[in-house]
Length: 417
Image: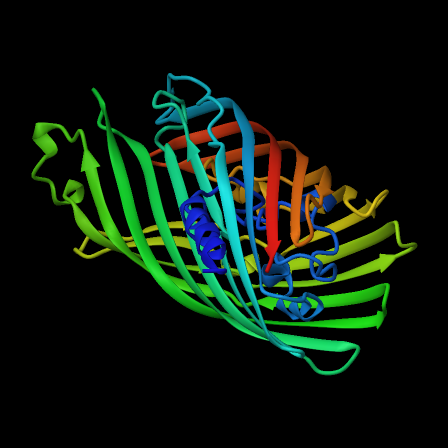
């Protein structure tokens, strides 16, 4: 019965983890409501909360007693388009598409068991990638994109072992489900139709990490999460096809296949307590987005595949943070980060109009009772502008600029039993 609250937390976050949000590329960093307060600086080295199960499972050896944690971040992205679309030499009429990214709740849940002095077992439920946007139906670029949704749910068990006083290591597995929905309008001349693609898949991966404690106040961490290859099977269908074209094989429903490889990540971080009240931290991570070269949709019938070049690059994320602990129960956080977009101007698409961004964050932590910890955090991401010039014979030449920013509000609660 003493583990009943853990099961309740996990059940709650299973519902939250289905949400996905617009982020750099379509990677999500909101696996920790507490970590947001430091802009995720030192996430691989802090190891004073159960969210270390995602950022660096080796950090579990610093935690004592069975623990559970629930995290949620409300992500409020904004991206507005200014420009035009020209199809066969004629300007496409319509709106600017509205504020197309959707605000969503991104959740995570963590369970940790403390079976022996040097061993820890953990289970993390997270959403490491995601995207969700919805343009107005009448926007000028509707033949390029309307709805774009990619949702992931990742279950990761791990085991950590303290080798000696200074070194801890960990390894784990990943089981991940991905679900996609893509739509765009189709120009049938007198009216518009709709093209819709759906699909899902399960994939496997692994994790490895280590932590080195140089002194009681200084430590460093390294963590690696493998890439995940998803062989997505689904369906494609047209809506609003004119009667004269209804029997045309090109507009019939069909099964589909699309292979998407989600990138690996490698992160190194440091944490240092200047005094018992003050600590500073930093993280640098690399995401292998260069695996995302082409988006290809194959049909089960004989029609040609749809192929869209992406040509993304590997990216870097760097963060700095500081924490002040004025009392035993109260903690104040600040952080800043720089996040590099994986896409170059010539390959930017309206589904992911990404740009480099700067994070500024802060937070407060409070211990209401022994074994309980609450964190409330806020962040603003300055995305700047991103130009686009996409030319497609069926969708038109879409040119213009996007203005992007994101607001985030995070919360996390942990319990030690």
